[in-house]
Length: 294
Image 1 (cartoon, rainbow, N blue to C red):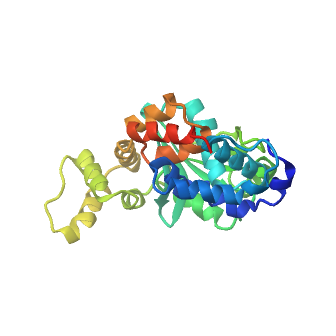
Image 2 (spheres, helix red, strand yellow):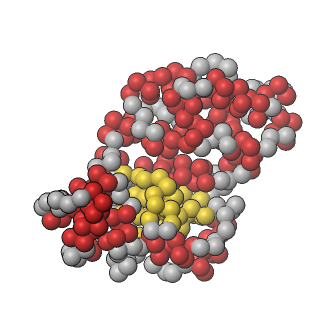
């Protein structure tokens, strides 16, 4: 699209800081969007572009996204592809919740999917280390039943040698596609009620307790968590997990899901819109802003 001269001087690491959930929030919400566009132009050496400059805000961000896909495949690109190429193609958002950066035990899962099934996705880009991977996977199995490693196609064999055969493998291509190399097998042998409980918000673990035993213990605030956990721990872990997943699914935002599925949002921004709970007013403002001339 653009002359090679401007592409040669783009710093992909710095550019990546403008395409992630935190940075794109400025575009989605309108908060300091003008400053964001100004920074994006500077990163892309706008004044040095010799031909075919982007004409709209959407064109500008899309060009940056494509450049990063070629030069610097970092985590946000994987998460974006996971939503667009895997989740939206295989599941209905009406019955699916996708959790971002979800704490499980001593680890933080990159993405968790809950619907009729439950899956954890651990992303390992070409920029990441495999250190701690097995301990991360072990933590994930304490709350969820299926674990996937999402990595670049060139690293599939490396991670196949590291993880057990029950762990699924998803390959991320140079073009940003996602393909299933190996489906995960269900493993419920490591489920841990305490780990599930601690991953929830207070209102959620109270709701989970009520769903499991029919009541919430009448005790002091200091003892509430401990007593709830003690009660829940008396039930079978797979039954506890079933109620745990029911509670998590209540985080689904129907309005946001409808906009993600049926709206005219560019793929590069859908993941951020999803996790910022985009509403209809913000959606209309965002579309107008993306189509605005530079």
